[in-house]
Length: 179
Image 1 (cartoon, one colour):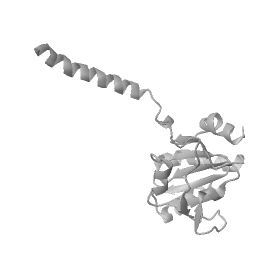
Image 2 (image 1 turned 90 degrees about the vertical axis):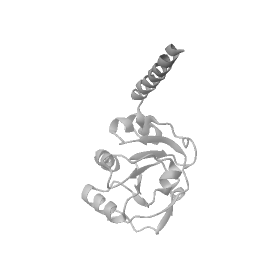
Image 3 (image 1 turned 120 degrees about the horizontal axis):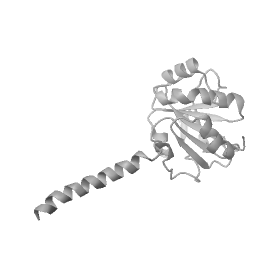
Image 4 (image 1 turned 45 degrees about the vertical axis):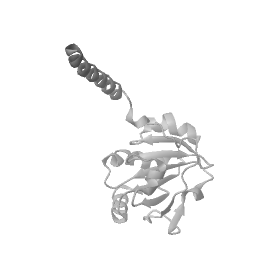
């Protein structure tokens, strides 16, 4: 009985070490999304007018953008990782025929406008998710996160973390029909 009192905690500790070891080898950007192959949430969000945009209606339903594939990128001015991917998003907007919709997540309009003015605006449209409600509907864990939406409005891919050129070539470009 005394031996069991010593072996039980050791067995529990060994099990926890094993779980942590497995977790360390998993890629956190590959969290499966229950929204894959389902219609994108029908979020209606306020349009954040930036210097690069044509004046839009004050609110826009994302389903109104159906008809061509697009990237939906959740970002924020306070997000350090968003800065890491921003140059690549500018490159995508410039060099590829990719329509990118930005959703400014849990941020102020002024901070987002200033950040886009200072760093460039790769977005065809920027919507404001001030309280994070749309992020909940989309299953956003944190920013940046990027979704590939097909022409029918169905989510085909979710990228957690900064979108890189390698990610784009391997996962996104084939879905958009651009190489």
